[in-house]
Length: 187
Image (cartoon, rainbow, N blue to C red; front, top):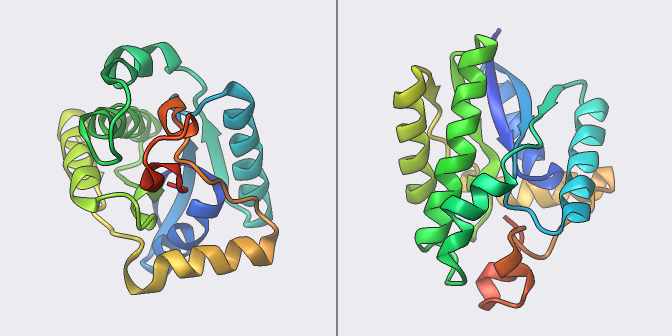
């Protein structure tokens, strides 16, 4: 079975995508890289949950805790704004660029992201960032809109079954501070 690196924003969002990849013939390897998450205690909580999900599902996981300064310089500097705007695209590019580089460095030829399981993320923006990252690192981006075919609902169901905590904001400091309602929802 061919491995695919799966960028994970949080454990609940990883549930259905990991199963979808596995049913498509891939062995998912989880990759937690989220320098956008604020405050740090929230990032650590999401990382702990992702690691617990990986253990319970017998999945390999790796984490990269660097990049918060880079996020501030590339995406955070754009300030508040609606979800799906320029800040989000810069954030996707940063996170998927690091994921593609990690896949290449690990000898894994394909990668995907859980970001598309959210009904609040525009798959077209995520796909744009993923294609750019793949091209720059010589790996394949698996353009999968994980929310399709009931994927989001399945992630909610599995999360409840496993007792995973669901977040009520995307993770960045602008969504935490009470941005527009769509931005306060889970990625």
